[in-house]
Image: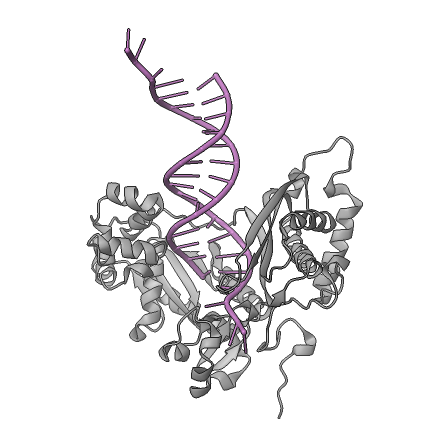
Length: 429
DNA sequence: TCTGGGGTCCTAGGACCC
DNA sequence: TCTGGGGTCCTAGGACCC
């Protein structure tokens, strides 16, 4: 199969070791040291500095299994500080937006930029410019991969990061270069192919990505679905995944957490669910959406084999759809009542809001004022604005409880340096 | 003692309709 | 004797992403 020429060109900008790099920006003592960042509840490793990767610390390893190793190699450990990472991410994305009119913010640490119409010779320079500007303005190192499809831009980015001589920028536009890298790329590193599909391909005598691009379409579609077929076309240089500059409105908004300690009491579970619902409702209103369906789930610890495992989910329609926290909490707690079993030790709980629709398309109701024009909406607005302005969460619902004894562990948090005055970095001279 | 959270999309299979 | 088939909707489960 040949590589088709295309008039499309994408740059993928990816922050290196993003969370670890964020911690480093405000703490120069972390430079050249192994740093790891933990998941919520201080569970497992979700980000590692290059030094930590070089020591062999694997992604998703439970941290309780590595404390000896951490001491031995003087690894610095942090709880995740999403307030800080989110704010730095916004700064990076806003810098990128100033460098191009066409950008898709793909995740907290990645963005695709359109480079359509740029001269082939200018692409690598453009990549280096991006890199320098982000580094100077935010302190975050980024890698840039440039190619004719998003999937190939991901490939380019992978090698920009992993080959030291590339200096963090790689432009993959020539057929020979693409083939050179595709046969050196492990299958599971392709965007859209993970362990399962890679193993399936290997069992079927497809050992590298170049071989995959040469497999027959019909076979790929039959055994690996149309999604993988699209990926393969992209690897062949045919752009099938467009730049999505405006993100489509979400299909679901959820909040779930593992508890910081065992929870058995009905009342504590109720408080946790009320708090998660309130959080999800804030996210819902921030996007000017209404929820038409709410779902609650609870579960005991899946890792405790000696205890009985129980998990259950329950949902109901919200008619008319709503973004009123009080109403959502009431529904959530009613659902919870139906699935709670006494005598169990719970570990996780969560809520999902689904069947979302824009507030401004709200259907009228014959007998009630619709949410959009109600006093309830004004109340929600006041709460959201106050909490956002004071950055405090001081206004909350009584149902959330006061002590939050079930809240997650976060024992190694750094400061919210960029969003809280009282946590501003202090420098002694 | 200690194992994340928030999403997306596709497929298969059942129920139901005409 | 002869016993359909196409379409839609829903749900659960799997695989993947960061």
